[in-house]
Length: 116
Ligand code: SF4
Image: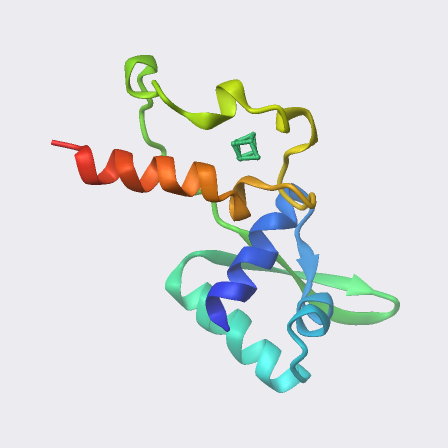
């Protein structure tokens, strides 16, 4: 459930999403939703910003930027995105997304397994 919550928050991008929207998407009650959000915050993968929404205080959730990794062009050979016919329609929060792409996942897994 936490992983699913994190994916939803990640896909919300820079605008983030309200805690209540996360609960709705997860199909959990506010107590369970708050517990998940606090757990993700404690793990350091999500930050919560207090926000006044429709006269009530709530939190907006944002995925924390991942650790910066230096990417070298010569390590990107074979990345399916460079030749993908769906690239113009692909993006976080879209029906076609890198978060759910088996071709990209396969490429990354292969690259990790072949890393020195
Ligand atoms: S993530 Fe997948 S669908 Fe998106 S551009 Fe790359 S290969 Fe294509």
